[in-house]
Length: 390
Image 1 (spheres, rainbow, N blue to C red):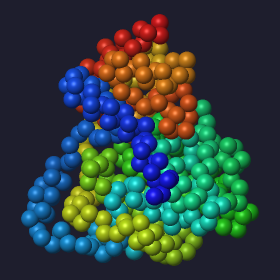
Image 2 (cartoon, helix red, strand yellow):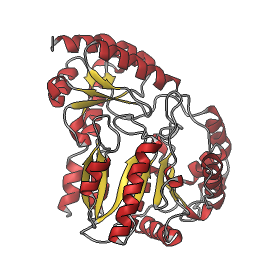
Image 3 (cartoon, one colour):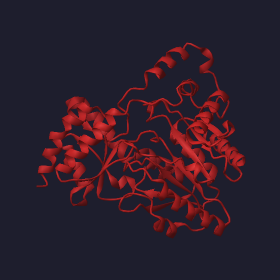
Image 4 (cartoon, helix red, strand yellow):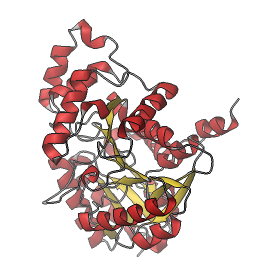
């Protein structure tokens, strides 16, 4: 058998391991006594209008049939029209590929982009751990580039890593795990550098935009739409977080119409989807999201949870990154020992994820996409935890 796949199957991600530990703990002491901040599993329900659409669609046998491999044409048109209207980019539906969630989007795009074993893909640390798995599955090498001390993109660090073998980089904004949103000025200096290197090396460097949290921002925060700034870009999108549909696995790939050889690149995405078995995304949810294309869940809970935890933990003396988006709080562990902090937290039934999984050390990620009741109930437990460090 494939030893690499055997190893991946036997060693789940740290996030999933902690989540499974939480399942066992809930069975032993009751869910109300477990403060599980491990998995990005949205708490608010899907929008009512989506539920109503599903109730209507599910009675129609036609929605359970195969669609075209890249998705139903009416759905692709709805997605393209939404992008064109919201961001002022004339997005053709012929460059939209419907997928079974962001993972399928990323895997298809990476497989379409990586051409040989010498290719490299840049990820900005801290980063979502599965990027490494997805990239290495294509045969490419992961090139980690550290963000700056404010967790924004660092141009100088990137320039040191940009050799001729770099074919792509992944940008995730709002970011998992820091909650950072990269401002336009920060992105622009990165894209100016990429354009310079593309000319120097004589080949495009594809910017892969991982955007499952695009609409999930707090206050008057603008999330730049990268294809309006960088021509050689492709968006990998998921409705999992914004519509609270993580288990339904529905998303898309949107190739920028400004990309060099955009239609050939889209054909490569289609070919990758074919080779990986990612054809005809779940048809019921294709049609369901198309009818509710710009709807979102109610994010009030996330905003309240973020403020509550940030205020409480900073009062306890912890250094936290104040999130602009997503639903994660990135917290510096006492004495920069994240693993020890997570183990101590388990004694108080608090489940956290150490930052080692995200390519950096010394931090923990708190996923606060839970009920406000759970967050409020966890505060005394955090207080008791921090007494161990006084």
